[in-house]
Image (cartoon, rainbow, N blue to C red; front, side, top):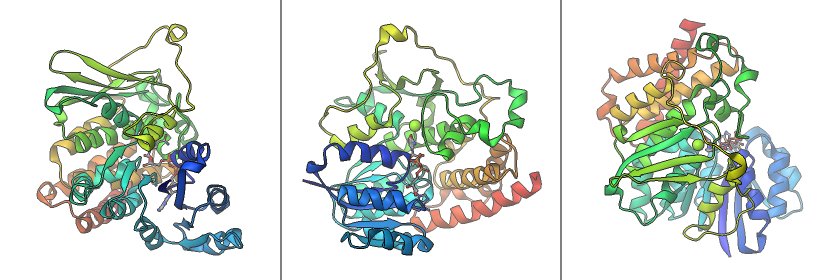
Amino acid sequence: MRRITLFGATGSVGQSAIDLIARDLSHYDVVALTGGRNVTRLAADAVRLGADLAVTCYPECYEELKRLLAGSGIEAAAGSDAIAEAAARPVDWALSAIVGVAGLVPGLVALQHGTTLALANKESLVTAGPLLLGTAKAHGATVLPVDSEHSAVFQALVGEDIAAVERVIITASGGAFRDWPVEKLATATLAQASSHPNWDMGQRITIDSASMFNKAMELIETKEFFHVPPSMIEVLIHRESLIHAMVGFNDGALMAHVGPPDMRHAIGYALHWPQRKSLPVARLDLAKIGALTFEAPDAARYPALALATRVMEEGALSGAVFNAAKERALDAFIAAEIGFLDMSRVVSATLDKMSSNGLQNAQVTLDNVIETDRLARIHAGEAISQLG
Ligand code: NAD
Ligand code: MG
């Protein structure tokens, strides 16, 4: 029996993980599930999976969660301290699928306890890559990528020497606006940005796909996870979303990972790693698909990509600034306070403002990350009010 915990169990990635685990329950001892406002879903899954503990991050949802779990023998808890406490409970494997920088602390606590961490929460790597991977190393814990592109790179590297790698290519669908005239992007609405051509995901990451902020985060994630220099990492527009990443070696070979756009593949790979087990995902009929297409990304359409290059080169706490400003700008776009293209303007202005105070040289400690996140949100807020 493998003991497991799922952080962000009620989200898009969390629910895909539950789909896999529920098919094979006799193999798992589910210790804790965490979620947010959807306590009905959280409680129902905790009962279905036989969890010991269910935690909502919102204290105001505690009474409702407790009521839903009454008589089940499952413990209820609420708040971010309770999530960190859940992360300290001994398990073999935990899924980090909280959205946003809130995923960082539970991931760190799990790693401090030697737990294998399947990481979907890209914000942890973007804001605090050296801290997260340093914590894993110090405690002999493993981090496995769950973001589909990084899982693909990880799989292409099995048995390979990283020193023989020349380039890492992550693919992007191009998002909701890939065929819009660039001049029209400024008018994009929330509803238009919230639909993805190929993947079914949470709302925030779907909007980040339309703006390519998601791919920008993934560039930084690639640099942090695989320790490759920014000059070796590329983005390629691939509309079909069937090749998730490619690794180029010094003998000219390109190893491409091809699979259906279904997060259950990457989650299942991390769940069963280092083995492969049969997964309930579609098998591709390439003859039917016929052709795969590739295009270079247009820098004018996707200004977020140049911002990612800047962050990778600056290093240290620039990732924390980038992520916080991006989250704040995304909130403002969702609240209709700023336009679609203003998001990259806000992030750029925040990076400018904060890179003047020696960020590049600061240590990536948890305290510094939290403080940088706080300051970057304030500066991003100022940039938003200047635009609004
Ligand atoms: P989602 O919005 O569908 O779910 C987020 C989960 O986090 C929910 O369980 C929610 O209750 C919880 N949560 C939200 N705020 C929280 C907080 N402050 N504290 C604790 N818990 C909180 O998001 P998602 O699409 O499943 O994405 C989760 C993470 O995985 C993100 O980092 C995302 O970038 C990454 N990711 C997602 C996909 C995808 O296909 N959806 C693919 C790759 C990577
Ligand atoms: Mg991805």
